[in-house]
Image (cartoon, rainbow, N blue to C red; front, side):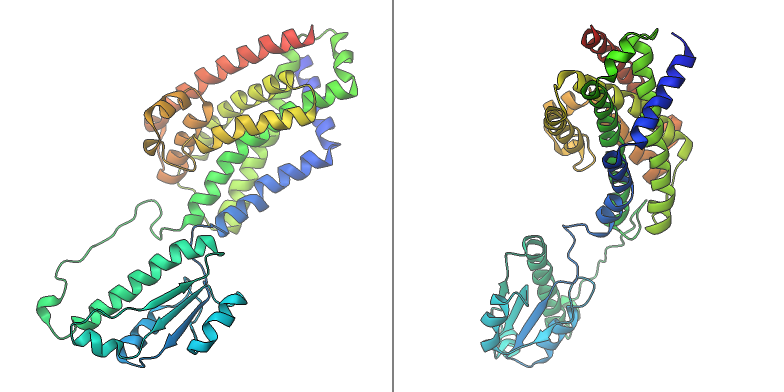
Length: 370
């Protein structure tokens, strides 16, 4: 095996990538707009929900409830009449309409249990699910504070002092941005190497390589280093320019340690891309295989849902996937400023899994070239 062959073949791959506008656009989108969108448009977060109030009581407690619905969770409440509820909701102007009945405060002070009607537009699914709970908590809190204001015995004497580590403002955008970068590393490395191999086969250039004095290992290593380099540079750009610059997300840990783990993940993922390309007969088939492979890797690796909440058999199976160890390592380094003394098991696991994936893909690639 000659390093010069590996280098020249890698340059050839980079030139082929530069002439493919679709893949270039995918790289730019995955490491810029996709990450910015994931960080700023978290769907489960209640944000600026449209709310209207029908205040038929005009009491002190109803005013307290109205003043408690404030941005950024809700838009300033619109005061409407009962006759306007159905037309406004039919037109999609309000997601929530809170109807406070007459005599509400009087019934509270008399010890009765009056009811407030909350109308919810459930076509706004994510806001309807979380917003209803938010409004219920707000109403309960304000009513409780109002009723206990004159009796010291009813006051809560124990408070909760909350200290959030690593993300003191509990900003979901921090989590979304970095996890999207982690996901993009795996996705792009598989797609770029697999697409490069299928493109060569469809254009007939793979036959040209077979008559040249190069080995399958040299061809495969050239694809790994050049596509891995592209993804690694895009990752650094995304972390420093998009995540840290545009989104103001602090990166806590050692960037060198993260890039070492990312490089090992790239070896495993690019080898996986070559393996899938040898199985697929065409680009459409490669796309179908990607859906079968990428979705479990991304969903079950711990990036979206903590591994501890998954069944033990799933945790055991996914321990053989490089994504699992890369997500654990990347989150520990970038979120919690972990050092090598903490993430060395994940580094060793990535090293072993990358070696196994490379050997298996090389065997399949040799059989593919025969």
